[in-house]
Amino acid sequence: MLRGCASLVLALGLLACGPQPTLPDGTLAPIKVGLVTSLTGTLGTDGPSWRDAARVAEREVNAAGGPIDGRPIELIVVDDETNPGRAEAIATRLVNDDEVVAVIGAAASSISLGLAQITGPAQIPQISCCSTSDLITDRAMMQAEGERFLFRTAPADILQAKVVSIAAENLACASLAVLHLDDSYGQPFGDAIVREFRAGGGVIAAQVPFADEQASYTAELSMIRDAMPDCVALVAFPGSAGTIVRDWASLSGTPDVTWIGTDGIRAPGFVDQAADPGLIDGFFGTSPITDPATREYNAFRDRYRAFYGEDPIPFSSNQYDAVALLALAIARAGSTDGVAIRDALLEVSGPPSDTGGLVEPGALAAGLADVRRGTDVDYQGASGNVNFDVLGNVVTAYEIWRYDAPGSTASCDDRTTLSGDRGSFCRFRTLNAEEIR
Amino acid sequence: MSRALTAALLTCLVAGCAPEPVRVDLGFPREENFLFTEQGRLLVYDASGDLDVCASLLERIDASDFGDPVIDSDWRPVCELREGVGFTAPEGPHAYVALGQDGDNRIIVSGCHVAEAYADAPAIEVELYPTADYAVSTQGRTPGCANAQDKCTRGCL
Image (cartoon, rainbow over all chains, first blue to last red; front, side, top):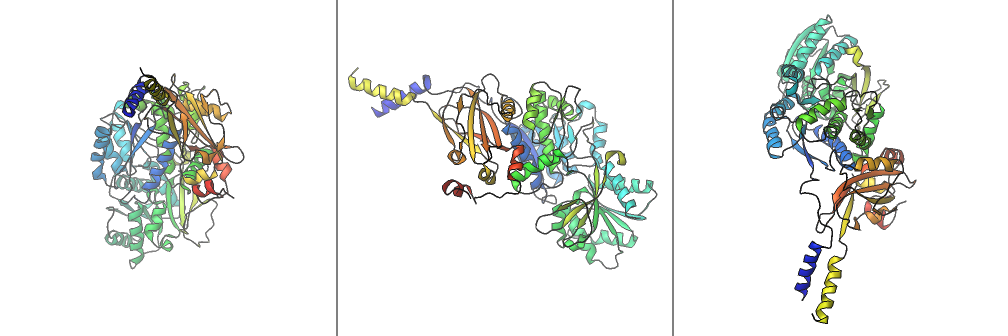
């Protein structure tokens, strides 16, 4: 009898009783998006924070019901190990096996370019938070407009090279040595610094490329020492930069130089890799301003803090913006078709029409509602206005920064203090886009 | 049909046709968000005509317009929602909206998820996200409890 009852209950339940699914299978399935970042390798100290920033945007979009048709975004996180050699395999897996509709990433320019070899022909939009190499612009210029699927929320290095030159001028560097990574980030960046500094009448004492993640840079640093420059421009990632400052400190006969680093090393990871904060006290550098005290940045920072209990690092806001823009673009496109999303990215990032509206971080639900009402929206990012041009680039303001070790008495009006008594980064000077162009 | 069998069938019918409860879980980004939240509320809206209804619902709720939910738990201590909420499942796609407010009745977390509830369906999770008032509410404060267990068993200072 019990078995009979159970069968009857099941039959009645299926035929007439409890609620049954009404939507076709998969209707509310997540929209898959690849997130390629460096959780290990030389950028591994910063990659987790960039992943976390993407998570904040993913969560915000999903808490608003997802970008389209009630479907949430699902970020598929892949560690590229800061290894350009992994890019093609990662992109192939994401596109062919995971069937992602877009890719967020990577951080290193060489890896972003490697991913784009696969995502571009597959017409999968790709947005990098952090890749600043001019090679990305060069590649876009060689493509027809319809072939361009790579965007970035960080500005190109050609502008930063000008800022390095301005910094060197401000710091009274008559001669400058340029020590740079030999990859697709460092080589064109180093070349651009040489060009800009010479154009301003400065003397290039030496230009020395180096490979990332070497145990020692004594040979390269000896060449710099022998050139006796006033200043050294260093284009590196935190891991190699840490080794370089330690090796420089242990090298004999070095001149008293002023260091000017770049965006790749303005990160807590650089301080950690240097091991002794005293070695880098007074170290200058340049970086796109990714943490201006704008309402948009503060809205992002407040959410990041609510999630993780600490402040975001440079380029975290660019990563948040990448995911936010993608979600708005999917909503605008009204589909997950790659070409439609690519075209919509240009629309939702750019200035709106007279009847349009602005969308800000922390208010993506309202932005998604606006898009669905047909409003022409313009996303104002946490990292800047993030208006994409036809090459997928954005323009932003820059800073000249200075690292101050714990106990430093150097004065500073705008200081970002690192946790764990690791000193601080001081915003020494701000340059807006018009000053740099 | 014997009287005994009729009674058994009726029993089966009553048991079998009882409304199917569905569990709705509230997903806080981290425990501290839960500790700052005093009250929670779950509202369920018909989404059969528009699966994209969440964003506009949250926009209306932000303006204190709760509309016409098919189910409304009303505000209740958030600890009562900690292990999820059992609801009678309405058929068809619905928007499940979850809200959390602080001691000053400010909504500090919110979220919406469109799902279908049906027999044997997985629990519905509504992911919560901090509103603009979250930072205002928590600025300079530390939670009065060390963890959720303390909050819900002993209460916070």
